[in-house]
Image (tube, rainbow, N blue to C red; front, side):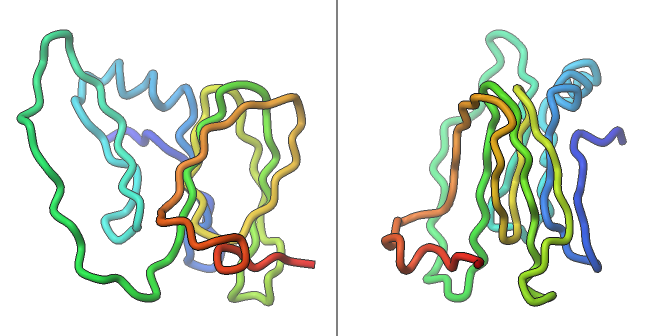
Length: 144
């Protein structure tokens, strides 16, 4: 099966998953209707749909989870325009920067670790993260 994403790993941990514009084009060419890019145990489940005109999906609701504790928080970004360098940090290594990646217009990324952004161009992004929002003090731990 062709790969529809890139994985950034460090010491056996997935730091980030990147879906580049070319991966979406590859899926379209394959004719597969749906490809999930995230592992089953990830809090975010990200799939790429490749559907035909007038195709339907049966109406449905998603069942709620029981109360979750110590649930890792991930973020998803889609780059509408511009380019961004993202530094990736691993808390298992005293918050050390362990990798960096550049994402550009049309790319998406799922972040599974600490991160910092440098905008290489004027940029617009769509961000998706788990809620509910708990307030800045409870949401983030900033690095020096």
